[in-house]
Image (cartoon, rainbow, N blue to C red; front, side, top):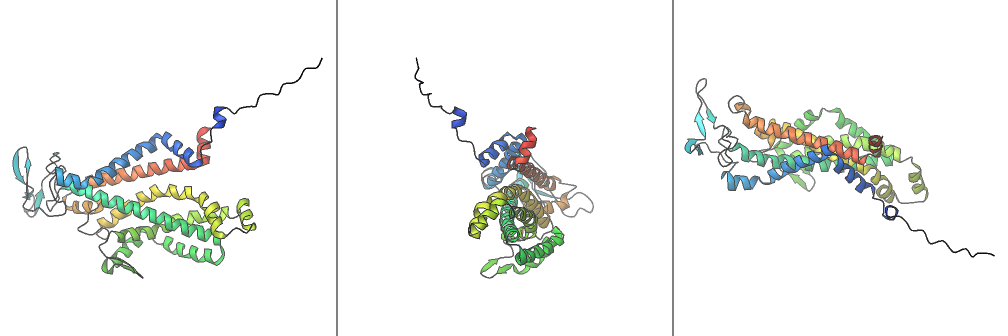
Length: 347
């Protein structure tokens, strides 16, 4: 007697199989969030940026001072007593003045005053806005231009690659700070004029342009090498053989492969740009008055190093803290976007 074979019920996918696998960017974000060092550095950077954004609030509503105006004859309140912000120096020949030291009172010269009677804490917050703005803007501009130059040079090859590579080699040959100082000294006189584009000598865009220009080879050269390798891959050769336009190949095949590397460079270049800006401002060829940055505040406190060291130490500590956090975050982003790093971490 034969038995009819009943059809087997349709197989159903398990919940894990039914779910769509996360994309590479979501996977990288999850890996980054699991990196405690990177998360801690991101929190530190968030607090620094938040404090800098609150600079007008602190100066107007808490300290009640103008950090860009001299207060040579100003007074403040310490322990209920009215005291002058600047007192005649009691050391040496008695020449000059000694600013008030840290009072640790947020409303009355929390970190003391500089040699012009300006509130150091308020200037520190305003200086952070300038340093962060220049650092982030210069880093983004450097990565944007460097990525474009590296991709064009690596994919075009031939004469285009040779010309671009030689220009990068010339810029690379100069010591970074020497080149930045030379450009700053020249452009601080007449500003920058490139056709219809004009940047005034005292504009914050001037140090941004200088820093971005000198660091382009640091981005373009490694990306050019990466594109040279990608150009010989089978899928690139197949796209070329199918007659796909060059712009389409660059947009769909080349850029997605070099974009993670460019993103990794952003926090690292931000830290490098901030250090360069601080060095230029310390030498008086960076941010110009009335603007303030952490580098200019260090220069203001150089003559007070032995009597009021907080004027110099405070911005120096913030520069070190911010750049260290950016470097740790950059390492975390690199590990999250590097598949080989994830594989090594899982072994």
